[in-house]
Length: 189
Image (cartoon, rainbow, N blue to C red; front, side, top):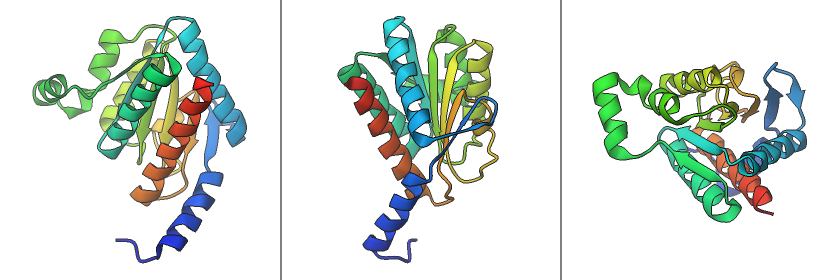
């Protein structure tokens, strides 16, 4: 439960948005502008190469990636798919274990140079990490969005990694949503 008023919440959120950290595949720091520009270019390159964007997230992050998929398809014209189809998701969780629910579809649908985007507040969810590893094996390009621990597993697996330095879900998820809106809006040009 938040023990602050709305002005304090917005002030803290504003600080966090401006302190999002971006790293590349080697862990080298990039400016937020450079990371955003590279992400937008990856999205546009995916479109021009007739590749696809694959997206995964759990809970609130699942809602975020669903919105990103909508914006990429409708506003940007990028082929995008999200792994939240309930019958398949629950069948995989029941029969293969919840850790497989993103790895399995990546193994089925991902192709070399597709773009895999994950949103995970903790960056530690087993199903996200397994999906990321599968995407790397398929030679996909990878973008991660995470928060909580700066040494989370997701942040070590992306070509570009956006990290929100907070352990509060409300801040991390709101920052991820704002970042996603910026990226898809800029890609739509």
